[in-house]
Image (cartoon, rainbow, N blue to C red; front, side, top):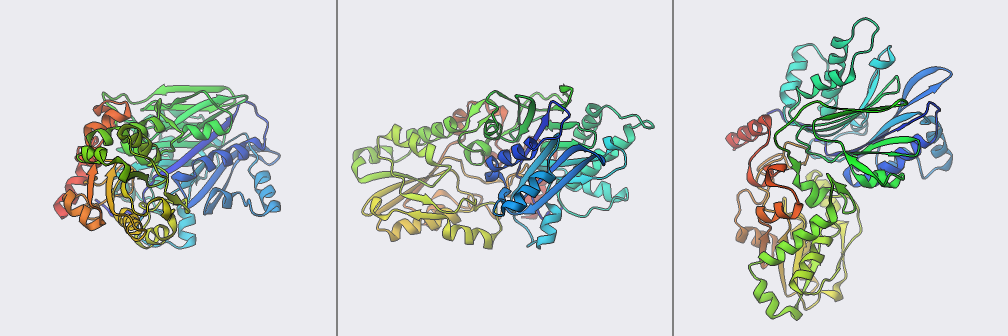
Length: 503
């Protein structure tokens, strides 16, 4: 398996007006949606917009390192207005990208890897911008194949592979000047991919295309507002622009939006699904609805199950006044509420979050910097107490170790760590950035060893059965590869086998 410099856990959005008139609603709505998806990507942001003007039809693209506010120059009123004017259009797509592990990148290299990517061409229906969320498990195979066929690849980003693959099939399907059926082109591309992919594309003739892998790894929704359609990685983005009735883009489906309306076609059918359970435990926003299920409800259920199955629950119950339940914010708060309600032990929001960046998915030095300033502690709420610390997950153990140390320094008598996620023992090849066995604390350590390394008095993980029951899905509808080693695709299993052999 080829080593890669970046993964693709990101957020994507798209909007398409039902009329032909260019409008500032397009960049405004893309901005508002991307802000709601900022938790999915904090390294770079970008937008590509189709517009009609005196100089003809074209796609305008703008990308920047940093947050969505940096892309839209929100700190400088005159520049912000210029950006809005530049990105006026009829339809467009947007992207936020995570700062993922790998080699240190320069500003220019990072900007080159920022999305959307633009495929230029003289014919409008062959010109397109593309944005992607997920991770191609067969990336190495596809990259080698393209290099053999003479392609020049400038990055190690999945999106570049997707862009060239789509362009290749678009050319092969074209007959003279006639535009091919985009559903058929998308189908040929999708059948070559193994892994997680939610894709949105803006074409130079106005078509906006969206498709989702047939196992449904990543969340992807669409809806219609007054005079427009929109798609996004999470429902909160659609709600922000006034769409309160939204629908999942069904796994294996492709959708086309333009001034004529919306068309949808099933491209690939599958007997099972593989919705990423980690989206529900950690990644998605608590106020999102993912594939018809409330994330907040799922996390509360996880906390309730943890309390019911806690091996020390009887001890906690006998001395409940000595304990308090403390969540590591923000993701674990609903779970802590569920744990507190089930156990009868008081909830204390003693930990506060001062840095909105997420730590585990960054490289080592950046994780250290983020964690050093990420959490605050209201010491008088925990001094002299025994703490049941609720974490959404324990990946490397770095965050938990720092939090436990801070609690000890504040005068806490005991710390019992409880994880809503089962032990993560296997790498993910579908878009969550823990791609190796060596980084995962649970791979080679027992619960007792992990508790000692973290500095906790005890540790208890959610059971897989409890995780599945909490989501509202059947086991065969979820991807659980990182906790049980059962990969739902051939390339994922192959990658795992190669890494195990290297160990």
